[in-house]
Length: 323
Image 1 (cartoon, rainbow, N blue to C red):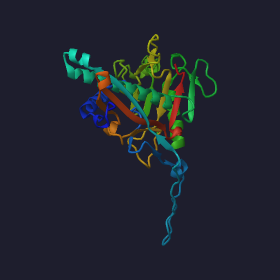
Image 2 (cartoon, rainbow, N blue to C red):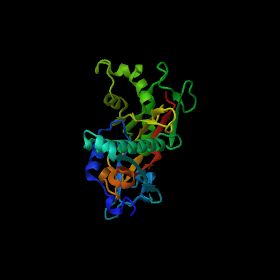
Image 3 (cartoon, rainbow, N blue to C red):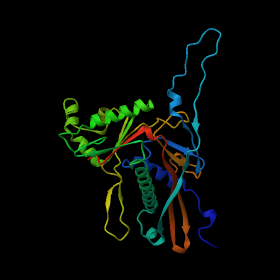
Image 4 (tube, rainbow, N blue to C red):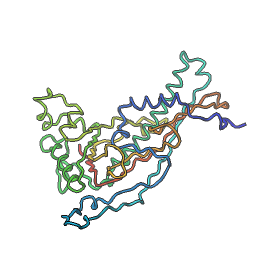
């Protein structure tokens, strides 16, 4: 009989709970913190995009006695689709290691945390590719040491650059064309390092915050609700080669509007669609444990299906090569 048999493969609730707890504590990962999570029961489906112009066109008119009010509405585009790709990874815990372990329970916990981190790294790299790449948003702004056209001074140029003004200008441009003021700013760790030491930012806080720059303070300075930094690092070298470890993204900043919660009638620059039809609750991640008898091992397997989707490209501005 093949192994594992179908009745041996099941979601392990205890290990899934460990995975969820690990995800909640993994502060380096931001893929689930920027845009709203949309739990979906189907792996792929359509979603609605409302016509922006219909929401800002003035239809209301003065009403004469005994006459009908002015009527109107909005158009929707139901052709956009999402597709939650399924990602999975496993770690085998062999019988010899288990028999030699001082604490057997820790083996399953450690394996669960490892496969969970693998899923989180995959989700973070997909998120960075989908949202922090040029050509994704309606507006890309490049940093330069000698800017021309739509370029701005790199924020590492402490003499000429003004990141506060650059973000404010981009914020105004988004708001005046969409009606929504951006409320989230994502900067890569190398950009954060320059911002925390930028003279124009230090000048703003030196009398009130003792010169200590935190991410909450930066959120207030830039006028956003959330200021997030993707601290996750990934090794892009194949196994056996020299490690090549770096942050999932560098030299970039994303200013965007994120809806407080997913809604059919509220715009958002992006949504993270998570397929919960397989189980795993709102996080979408599930952990399975089953016997691999031919390997004399127990297999711990994690999987998650998601799609990081740009929904409204005019609600985001990407700064690249900004330091």
